[in-house]
Image (cartoon, rainbow, N blue to C red; front, top):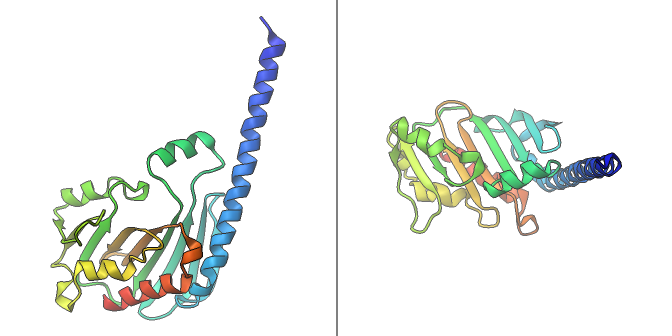
Length: 218
């Protein structure tokens, strides 16, 4: 038995794993910092006094202490692929995980209806559609060719003159693919998820302004 060869293989494997972890962590931190710099101009539209917290190396949380009306509170999450863990990265990527931008808010007045529009194959929405169907949410109309599925409860948004397609159009920026739009009577009352890509073609001010306009409709 060649113990020396086995030991060398073990050491080489350990070095590769540690090196990948270090490189993946560095890439995620750089990616997260770039996203934070990109999003910073839009934060002023949500409110004042923002706190920042890293969630490991694959997530960043921003909390707004004093949100502007019609928001009561707001928080932003940047969720990154686990690039520091090669096996998990490959597994999650195969299941559709991509970098996500999530904006959530509690409104000063709860919405009169509930709506869920989501991409059924996104990793962050896995199982949501089945749960909604089990809870007797009713299917909602969508624009022709939309990759999303939608469900509503409480009569839907039509009472205020705003249809589901109009609400989706308000936050479907094109440059950042829409993953989920959730309107709930419970907190968070409003949540929008976008896939993070094409930042050089999008402005954070436009993203937050679209979120605020939708909140005002509710």
